[in-house]
Amino acid sequence: MAAHIGHRLRKGATSGVVMAAAVAALAASQAPEAVQPPADNTGGDRAIGAGETVPPSGDGSATGDSPYYTELPPLNTPNKPGAITNLPVITGPAEAGIPASVLAAYKRAEQSIRSTAPGCNLPWQLLAGIGKVESGQARGGRVDANGTTLSPILGPVLNGVGFANISDTDDGAYDGDKVHDRAVGPMQFIPSTWATWGQDANSDGKKDPNNIYDAAQAAGLYLCANDRNLALKADLDRAILSYNRSTEYLNLVMSWVTYYQRGTHQIPDGTGTLPVDRSDDPVRGNRPTVPSSPAPTTPAPVTPKPKPSVTSPAPVKPPTTPTKPPVTPPTVTPAAKVVRLTIVANGRLTTTTGSDFTGAPRVVALDATGRPVAGVGVRFEIAGTTDARFAGGATAVTVTTGSAGLASSPLLRAGARTGTFTVRATVVGRTLAAADFAATVTERQADTLTRVGEGIPTATTGTAFSREIQVKATHDGALAPGVAVTATVVTSDTDPQESTEGPYFKQGDQTVRTVTLTTGVDGLLTLAPDTLFAGDKAGTFFLQLTTPGGGKVFVELTVQAPSTPEPTPSGTGSPEATPSPGSSPTA
Image (tube, rainbow, N blue to C red; front, side):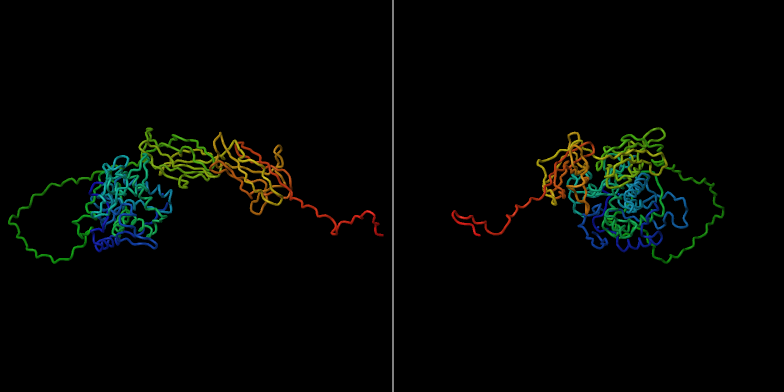
């Protein structure tokens, strides 16, 4: 932004007493302080919640606590009870009108985030309030057709002179300064914060902090961080204070949020007025930002003027025809121009369980002449029985078409469930025919199983096999991770039938002879020692392992009976004496 636009890094020149009085007067005539969710993803003088700590100055806020514009909205709100229904086009610093592209960006960000993080309850009026005080709604809506500011919006250099000292974090990529950082864009992100939260909301292939669509989406996600519910006053206050750590800033933003909730209107891009007063203005002193009631004064005595001596009537001016105010033609939203969505890529999606789909659903939004329409919200939704999900675990996301009218869904990943389902693309806010993408998930396959290692696993009846059994799965010569392997104890490798006795596996308290296992990331399946038990019958058995895709291998198993101890000789006395020669046997 130019040097005259930015955020606050020191305590504002506005008096806390004056600000509190102005906000109190404003609140009394306008609306409650809490932001209500609609029916349908620090420090200054901020208040600290339980368990929270204040980060060092300039650290932990979206803006680096740069200066901000301090004008408050007028006390007469757009839709104050008893006011006219048709809002007048008010101009000046406190205008209720918001430039068309800027307003569209706020509403699109709200809609997108409500589809991915509905529990946040983000209102677009919060983005509008922050955008008003940070950049005067992108300098009064001075943006091009894609929502990018006509010139970069830069805050002051954060070099420690009157502001925090933040050394360069982006090598000048966003702010043009390779020594220190500066806040950038209509929502005034410092580069280090943009590096984390930057978005490509208009699908032009880049994350640009000077693009109002990208910046509004990033600001919304930043405000919703830490599972905040912005319908709760405490979470709403924390969100605003995380943007710029000042209670004055919080009160100022909330006054604009309340004002916009009462009503606003769309004005053409570039016709808004940039505010004047900023929180770092050295000549502001304690000048209030809203008009205060003047103290009563005694009227000066009035000296009657002598009557003119001429008694002839003054000439009568001819009546003039009242001038009609110029009529601004209604702005046609991008979505209203779309007549159809057309599939341009990946009409049929396939993958295996636990894998990413190759390619993402992609559509183009076209008008009645067949030309692409930019800036259209396209909702991609997973329909059908499946555990496939978009990146982040979402089942529905909203993407904005780029300058070529194209919108692609985020990465889609299959779960453990096989089968078919549909990815449906629709235009947000319009009832048009959907563009459907057929998706199929099949089991991972391996056409070959190979025994790793040698030797016949052997165990004694009633014990467990102590030798590790390992096999390798491949498909078309490549290692096959995540493949289901069925292991069955059989009696023969020529006529494999599940055995009813002999070796077995344990599943809880049950004895089974067939289990299903899965290869690891290296394509290996390992049966650890003490996984397979010998059973009570000695003999030769086989472990048959098979995979989807035709892989099969047999591992011979030997079960031995316990060894029999040597027999003990019969009798307990000495052997009979042999009579010596010449002696007679005893009678």
